[in-house]
Image (cartoon, rainbow, N blue to C red; front, side):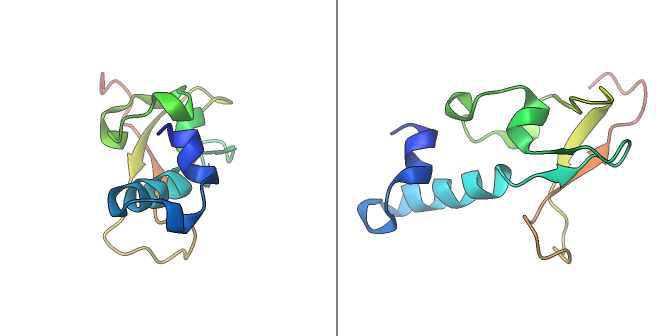
Length: 98
């Protein structure tokens, strides 16, 4: 099943693994603010990837803000205090070569 199909399929028609993947996808489509310029973008926009091309390796994707072009790091904080999507953007150190 494609990732885009997971997001539109009813909950009771999914296996346990598909439900877990859907939970992650729903989190990643939530937009978060670029800490450099304030532009709001989701993980897929930052990674420059289509949702159906993603294979559950969020930490391996090279991400950039589509407005200021600054390199971003997808980060899951130890404590999610914002109550939003459970993840945030962090600026990659300049010249990190990631």
